[in-house]
Length: 449
Image (cartoon, rainbow, N blue to C red; front, side):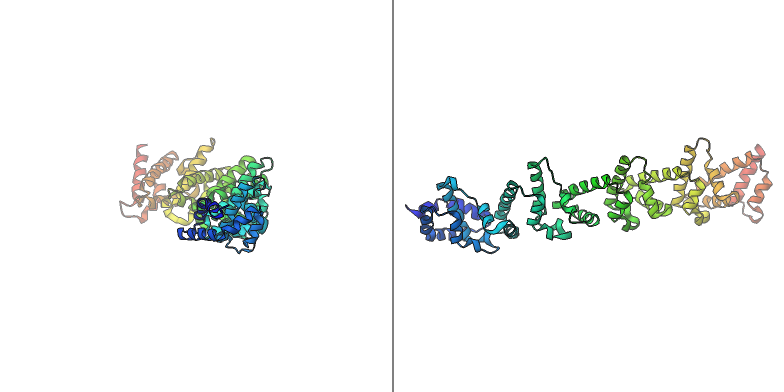
């Protein structure tokens, strides 16, 4: 029997294997020359039917270091294995089974993971890992077992950045396909090793990495479902997401939307709960600060929609608590603005609530002016209107309020001298002064009434 030609007939397949490992052409030729020199011995072993396992040891592959997959002798053994399998179809073996027998699952997994990080052996190692995962699947190894075998249990809080996280996630998916009656979630394994707060922060980071984003979304979905089933309150989830550490820019945070969705789901399941989005935020920030946060978010296109929702919920929340317009005026600390309140963003929020409150109370429909009179009193209101008439931004509103005020005075049959005294016109000489203009407007209306 001519051993060299027979061994060289496997050259092409061996070369393909070499290329898969990243071996260069000159290196492949070296392998061929090595095969030529070793062919007599290999053929002798084949003729004697020497088991592949024995040849593995004779080539000292059973004591190879972590660079086993780069060892040229492994190529010789693979060539021998293929010949042996052809000659002994009932005694066939495979590379993955032989390596597992000699090194064990854990050591082999470690070598494969290391080889995946080396360009020359990465492709071969990936194929070998696929075979290893399939072997484990056939052996019924649980996802938890594989998690440990891949050393993910040693990764701690860096588990999502571990290079084998994606491989493990795929194994879980394959395991569930084979075992539909006892599915395992990614979350169930991670939850036994990490507390809620730690896992949440890891998921946040993982969602920002393309390779782990899908995994993070899957884990978070299961985690959210568990929170809902265990009645974890929105306030607790708010803290778990560390939104309480975000300061006043919280609405800009992508996690804020996730929390709002959780709160909505919580309310759907536990109907009637007072643990609303706006209630949680109000308890955290207070009405004035929260209103300012909403106003800021309204000015940004990326947060305008959710800010509009929060604004509506805030108005509704005030009404549910039966807050009067005067109460909300105080809550928003608008008195501190003095006579310049009309030009303040918070004033516009208050005016919306005053309108909302009036529309919601059929028996109580005060005009905007009436609400302002309740808030300021007549003497102070005319001062605020006077200041507003001097500001281009509020001049129109001030004029409308003056007209309404004149109507109220006429209805109450106030004599001009009362208005003269109210406006303290004895101190005002300029005929173009807003107070003088208001008095003339009333005097004329009174004369024509």
